[in-house]
Length: 342
Image 1 (tube, helix red, strand yellow):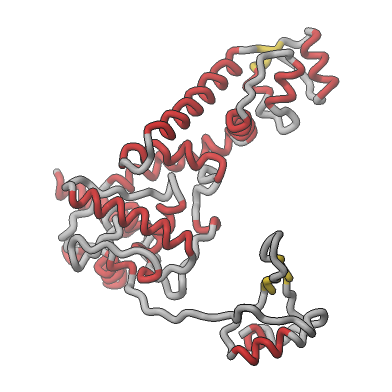
Image 2: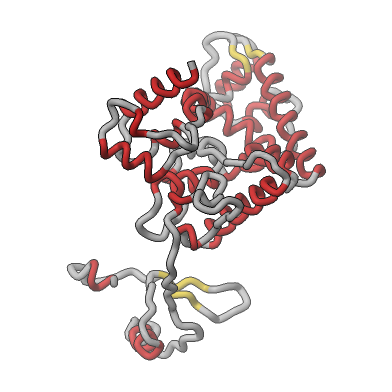
């Protein structure tokens, strides 16, 4: 495949990666192959330095069928067959994490359905799971789907360092997170809020010994009176450094310090993204009737009608993300819904 796609290249990089500290096995990253065993062994030994290598496990490929994920609701329940939830490769994805994420959502919603409760639909603004599922049920996939961070429009908010702050409360409400874990996260959240409030109230004035020391050590200039909160928004200032210079009480929890620094340094960007999220929430919360007849909405082109019929979006927000559905079409849908509910 590499030779066919990049025939103009004279070389191809391969990274020899140790499989662990207590093994002699090496994984040659960059060789994706499912050729016969003998052929794989032959071309491995053609690589300089691997002439005497022994292949312990051959490369392989998996071929599988899948169902069009556009046939699923956002809860991963089949539109065609009630109470059937699908997760993993059958939905067109590849990768362990992608399968696990879908299995979690499908399992939770299967249990909620048995209890006659509303399903949980993770949204794009709060989790990568929400991005993955929304992409699948809205756009489908023409090749095995992987969850890349570039697929998320709110990735500044969807960070590894704040995953527990974003999702633990939801998990606790759904019954998949224990009370002890929820309490730990709640205490962290409250501590972050309290510390930010304290930093907003504590002020530094120009011409004082503290201002002179800050200007010398960081360095940063104090032209007017600043709150410590404002000061920490400067890229040259860190929470621990400023607290030490002020001889002030410094929090010891590394998670809290990390969140303070992130929220201070990127606060403006995060606030702007939060405003975008809130603006889109109105569309996301506006549900479309299950039996909506798009033929009755005047002004829609036949192409857009067909796209909407194929996907049957559950919300106006989902409809707006269908490839080819224009903002003008979304406006027509909105007008139709308002007339219908008037």
